[in-house]
Length: 274
Image (cartoon, rainbow, N blue to C red; front, side):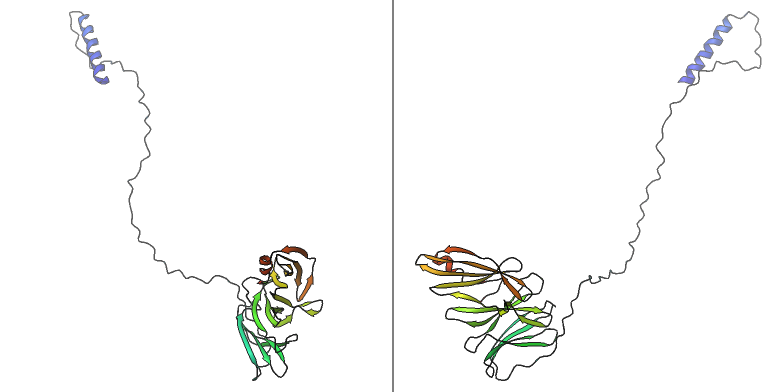
């Protein structure tokens, strides 16, 4: 359109020139007519989007990967302790009681037995270790009339190795509970002031007694005595266990109803049961 308009302007100019020219017609020269150039127009800058090659979808076959090999996670393996051999159970042994527990925390089940030796008139505590070997010892404060038997393990100290609870005798209305410390292949009777520790658990009309495992390292002897038909008086005596020795602490007293007093007559240590 701009170029056509320019041509019209040139033609109009030539026509006007012809009307003003003399009658004599001057032949046109061979020179090209002078044309008035239109002002240069700067074309707007057009920002072109970068050329984008058409996307080519190439299907690459999945890489073939060898099946992953699952390696076992790093774990700490505890090798069961190998303990020295010990004596066999005497042929005349009586009243054998057996439980299985991991006493020395080596991952192997240990066989714990109590049995009566008529020739000694004493009960024995015997451990056949899962990793091999035997520990066998006399329960010095037990007599034939008062049977001993293993109760089970409970970690009083919270050190990862449990103590072994066992009955070591009985009374008219109570069971006598003893404790044994386990270190490696050794089983040692827990003591109080150098004497074998014994805790009665049970109840009669006149007296009630029990044993409770409290916070780490703590063991409480519970007791109550009859006052009248509605009242018992008692309390608790705390003990702290360090190794194979119990140390008595300062206890506290309390009053109980008959029902509350009766509830004290238990062994309250984890899942252990008489």
